[in-house]
Length: 276
Length: 152
Image (cartoon, rainbow over all chains, first blue to last red; front, side, top):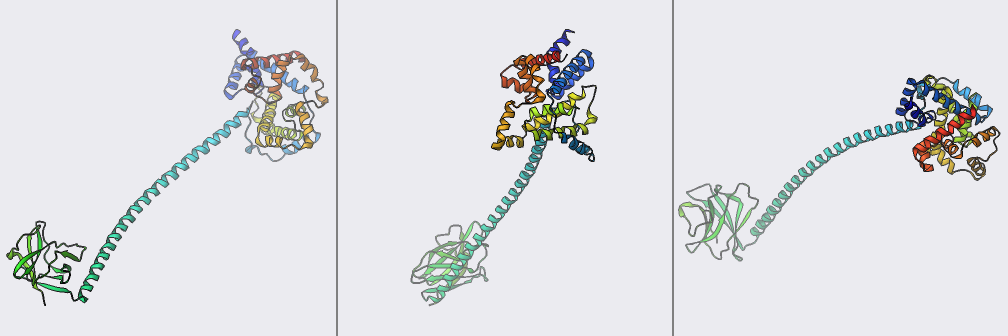
């Protein structure tokens, strides 16, 4: 009994009647009212007081309003479109509804953003692959262009040599060791440059332990003009060798890598005399 | 029969007569459409209708477009508007109220006035008056007890 008195005196019933409680508190009060007739009576007394207070404060609206309202109500029912208002409907419920919609919108936005991010990530990956592919292609082009430039420069040089009488073109023919072998040596008698032409060379590929060595025979004595490799994929057409002022014959032997001080005559592969 | 009582509260919350009339109309439409959800075991019909009217009024007063229109008052309307705000307009319907209000202690009446006619929640009232929430609840109860005594 004491408990009920405290409950009544707490002022919660007044707040209930004035629609100031949230849904949970409302349900609590309704529960209490259903269990205790004293509380139900108290609520009713408050309601009657507020009703009388409202009647005392009554202001007659414009008489036209009544007919307008009746006209509005007698229109075809729009009940489906209008949400049912619960007893003691509180203003924050509309706020909660707005917040729920906002929350749903945020969640939807998050999902959309996630998908967009995922797509962007994929596209970025694709773009990176493409960039890698393009840069590989570009490198290949650069290599090709360099190769072509080098070849072009070498070919230009060969063309110049032919027209320049200072250049001697020496054909070297195969020996017993390899009758099919042949190569060409260009020799600038004025500047003493010696150049080997790879494009006109037919020598077997040398292995890792051996290298070809070019010799000039000067008055019967062999002079070392340096070593060179015969590779399957050489980009260089012309190979510069050591200079020589005077020579009657050019010859090539297969020597150990780095060359030998004197030619190994059994390994003589090509030789040719300088035509005068 | 209830329309004057409802309109009395609406027009205290919303001082603009035209807007208040719109809200009255909206209130009746809502009452009409939601009649099924009224549960007589939970309270009196008038309390239910009053809370619908109050909530529509408070929603309106707190809505953005209403607040904007408040700022955009014509100068012509301003005098009436300020009068309405200060509630010094003569209102024959409220004449009987004077003696009730006189019987209420001002501090009780003030709290009831803020919650019932000005649309404050009891929490906002406590903040506004710088009072503990418990005091606001007690004063509200005392004010309504005074009203009950008066009407009996």
